[in-house]
Each structure stands twice: as structure tokens, then as C-alpha cells.
Image (tube, rainbow, N blue to C red; front, side, top):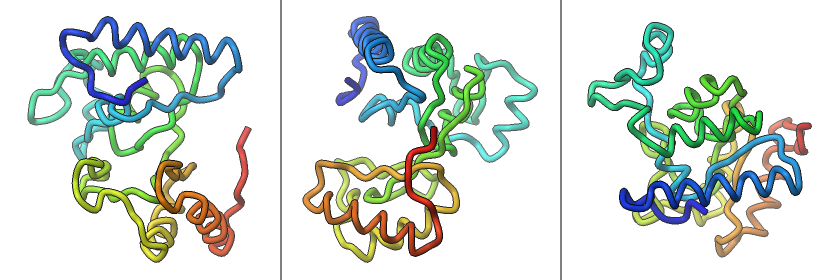
Length: 188
């Protein structure tokens, strides 16, 4: 689900798969939020222009919102994610500086601002693709700094379980948050 990019020829099949998986999971186990994964996350985490809030108050979802002429409605992943949020009445866990914010707002759901303790960021606030060098933080000092930098601005920190030091880093992230005065736990 979401590991690879959505091929134009397979949009319907791809989105049907995501919809059915979300539907099955929510009905089987319940959920309080939805977090896209992998390429689906990145495809829906488009960067917002600096004045996006004023533009969105004046313009509907299907209008251009950046100089490049991007229409949110032209991106099936965006529309599908927003529909999943509406249908299932779920919050969206995502990057607050991207279209994730707009999708949550338009779906009438809250955004859970997510940060990544073990990933590098681009200057625009999006993640450096894993295909690029140094996209993963592998040194304790870098993860510790990242946690201190992100903690005041996010509601949740993600730590990838497929990293070489994931267990060590999980303890490090928890300890760093506590040392900075944050409570660590699950928010119902």
C-alpha cells in the first residue's frame, strides 16, 4: 500500500486497493487517524506556497494554488485521501507545511502534525527522498538534534523501523523528548 508511485495507467486499481485496505482496517480494528505511507504520503505532501491560507479562503479546492498552476483536483491521490478522511471521519497524520493541511481542513478533520526523527528534510519542509544520499539520519547526534528541532512544532514523531539502529533510536528519541520536558505517550 503506497510503496511505489501511482502509475497513470493504474490509478483506479491503485486507489481501489488503498480504499479497500483502509475500509478493511477501520472496520476491523477502528482508527482515530489515517497516515498515508511511502510514495502515497510523498505524492500527497505537495509543498504549499507561503500565502496558501489566504488563497484557500478566497478560492475553492479545484483552483490553482501555486505559481506552477497546480490543481489539487487534478491529483487523484489528493481527492481520494480527502474522501477517505471524510468517509471514515479520521484525522490526517502528515506534514503540516504541505497539502496535507488543506486536505484535512477540507475534509473537516484535524491534522496531526508529524515530524521524522530519522529523516533529512529539504529547505521547503518536505522529506529528502530515500533514493538520495544522506536522506536517512544514522548518527545518534543527528537524531537527537532532529528531535530537539522538531518537538516544539509537531504532535507526533515518526521513527522508521527498517533502519539499522531503530531500537536504539527509539530509546534515544523517547529519552530526548523526556529530557526536553515532553510527555511521551498516546493521545486518545
